[in-house]
Image 1 (cartoon, rainbow, N blue to C red):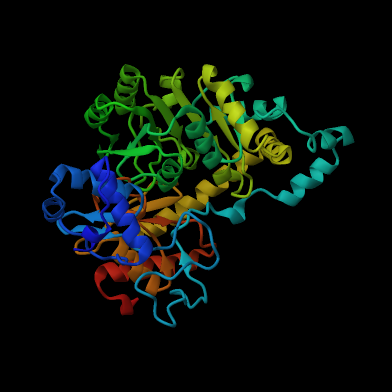
Image 2 (image 1 turned 180 degrees about the vertical axis):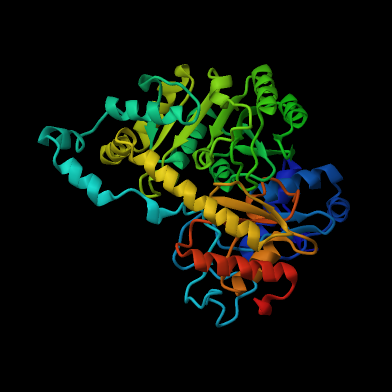
Length: 477
């Protein structure tokens, strides 16, 4: 048993076991995909409790070292392409793709990327037109954009942010928000400012992978909470909070990534009550909310920031609408937390580049942002219709104007196996295991991003390749 040679007794014992796993992987003694001993076998060999090994394997999964598969065991995680990092040259799947497998279903030389959520970027507003308009501004206004500014942003930029935040369902004063370099930077600013090493962050069992990566670097602990079709289960969150150390709850409530679901109003009220009772911060990162058209037959669903303004940090993103290269997001926190958050920005990036904030404000104020949003919703609607017709009969979860779908996989497919098979056919998808916050997989599925392939015909070809895989006849597409 290899782990016996790697184990160095120390306290606490579960960390010693997790450290042994990490040393084994770093040295090459434990290879990708290799099965680890069962919890009972390892507990007996090391003369520790099974509970210690359970905790150790959970810690190794938190570090991204292992993955647990229900009914099969715990395995060394394989190095896989990170679908949330854009690249023109995706890494090969494991096992390695065949020599000619880089050709997409439509005969392209590149993989058709349905893994990374690129939000129809050919519909982004014209940067050249915006820059031409800016050059007509008074020289003093342009000089202002080259100078150091208050970390939270210029007054007119914060005013535009307040108008943008209203689209997320929260009324906020320009003085009560700060400008961040995109939603990811906003999340990092919150975690750095308001959490301390050892704190726990609650999130759904399938959730945003960046949270896991940031938590690891900041020495925070992500606590996966069981969920149903309505989102995080209140009883499960309450039980986790009772165990202590819970600093925040992270939520994508209107279009959950990767499963597309919405947390209904009643569930939001329940979760707010629990957070109030335990004194827990709410991080509302509703980055995909604006992609969805309001449903006339649904009751109004309030934002968490509207329900609990005293404890909610709302991140109002712009990149999905105005372009990924425009790194601007508006962070709307409780007023008493503003100084700490603004200080973190001052100590890290000084300020968001004023030119970026000026472009965002221009497009928000002159109606361009709303025009582009409408165009992207229309394109998303056509592509969701295409996905539903192509994958009819399978477990596809989609929203009428959503930017991605969630495909539940039939047995015996796992998300990893399906993603590897799709990659060999020239289609990149995001396996459900990529979004796993704990060491147990609640379900097998893949996320299909609809906006990364500009040609709708190529998207159709990619979807047909996936349908053929599900039918078990990949050669017959």
